[in-house]
Amino acid sequence: MVVNPSQGAHVFLDYVHARFADEDEYQWLFELMREAVAQSSATEVHAHLAPFDGTTSPPGFAAVVLIDESHITAHCYADRGLLAVDCFTCGQTDPDHIADYLHERLLERMPDLVCLRRERVNRFITEA
Image 1 (tube, rainbow, N blue to C red):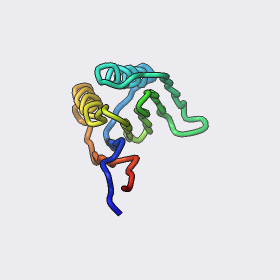
Image 2: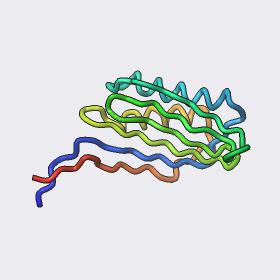
Image 3: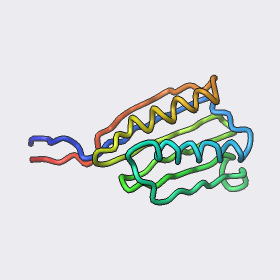
Image 4: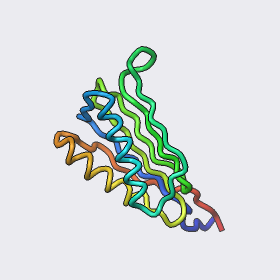
């Protein structure tokens, strides 16, 4: 089996010490995700933010920016300071570019934020 280059890539970022005081800060990250997509070669097709008040699931949020090339998501357990971000793109759009943009802006806003894991996984691998 010969493996050809991938047709996409997925970048995972796992953070601790993510401090979001209220839903306005959830909105800030959501808009940052949309900004990261806008400054890339990706094309946004839909975006949604779902805040969680803690009644059904822990306080925090889930956010998605659906792009023609795949998606950018964030999920946060605000009461625990946990934030997971993933950037999945296909074709010529580089998910590292989007992840770098998000990471730099997050650190500017939250200097105590720590990225415990950053991993890139090739997707849509084909065989010859």
